[in-house]
Length: 557
Ligand code: CTP
Ligand code: MG
Image (cartoon, rainbow, N blue to C red; front, top):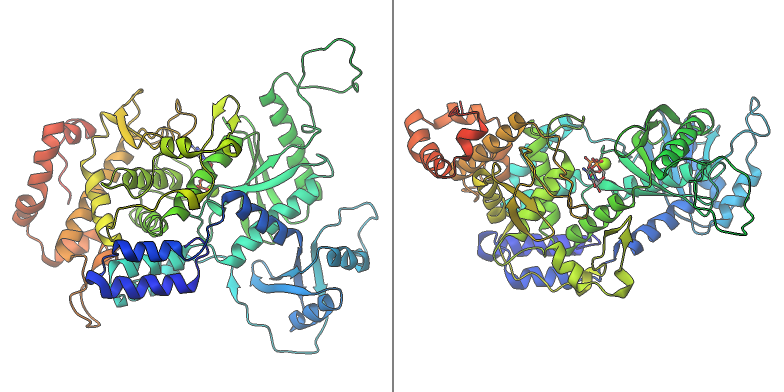
């Protein structure tokens, strides 16, 4: 459910393992969906922004200093929450019940000896001393889950699960952003806002992208969006002259894009020179969407700051809605993104491959095409919108329903395991050569331009989200999808017994080395007769495969 509450997770586990060998029945899906009222995106953002504004980030120096910090802060106001994590040192996040306690605390903070009176003061503080207790508060949160850590323990956990549905929930729990990580990310936005406000008064910094779209993963970047206040940036845009108007004499930029570039350039310099822990600042201002990249040392987060990018925030809201609408969406997205990373289909660096965002859209489109559908189309959500949902950004209609609770429950009762198999089969057979994907209509349509992979941007429908994907990378995606179908057919979606040394099954089978699987028990004739022949046959009908590989029939080996 939207709250990820343990009650719901437990219920889902117990029902899925007992009923129909892992199949979620319609009743179970409905039980799960009716447990809590789901927050809409605006409520979710405002709750977390409020929490961040009541929080401080403190670098701890000295043995056992955590207890001292808690005592110190408790004297200034009631605490709601606190946790520590390790980055380039030990840090604590302290959440007060009331933001007035923070002002009281800041009044007491002494500037460093070297610090000039005018220098920047923020809620990012240092606390040292206190050798009163040697016992360290247990660090309950680590900033990054490394891939290695995941791979060692993770396969054992998957093997021990009782159903594919359970395997997917394990993967989701392992990868999703912890509450503390979310808290820390909102706090970073709030600290950056506090800094930038000195040069762009009344600006607001919001997180967008995977941090808040419900598909966030530990270690993913922090996308931030700067909403300009009434002053409209550092450099305002030149406006048409009205008669009889008194205006301040200022410098102005020739276009909105130029104004954004100049504002971001100034912000980049300010971050670099004044805002603590913002390092490796890069200005990428000539990109289609100008951004400032920097590393936030204390939070150990790679940050991308943009402005004038409101459509991306609506896309974020749309994904949040899908992720929270049906309990199967998030586990499927997490599973496919992990599988794609594991198979080298995507990486965190930019390049000619599909991104996590593209993969997420592929999963949602696939779920729209089930019969009955698992999630509604964007056109349906637009038709359901009421007057408060109306939203036009830069002449683009971004209107859609914001209240998740008013969307009728899906009539689709397929299990996660069934959907996982169908997902691979669907894209292994999809005619990418001819068709583009539209989440707006929940349908494919003839490609308007000759990109290898074409996924229509949900709002800016003339744009292809996956325009960067090279033909070789698409071939690789299709190859891996076909391998996945074969692996599922060989290893099955059901656990056959409870022995410790059973061969990988379900999701675990998809995450093992495909070549090893081939050596283990497959002959070439089996490969050709049982697996490749029908696929080549179906692809020969559409001509997709032969064309994709420039006329060469490539045998998976
Ligand atoms: N976005 C978009 N069109 C694109 C790329 C990105 O609208 N072609 C928007 C999406 O809202 C996306 C956000 O920008 O969620 C951030 O992009 P990115 O960081 O690439 O993707 P994330 O969804 O944040 O995924 P990741 O966890 O990999 O960062
Ligand atoms: Mg991102």
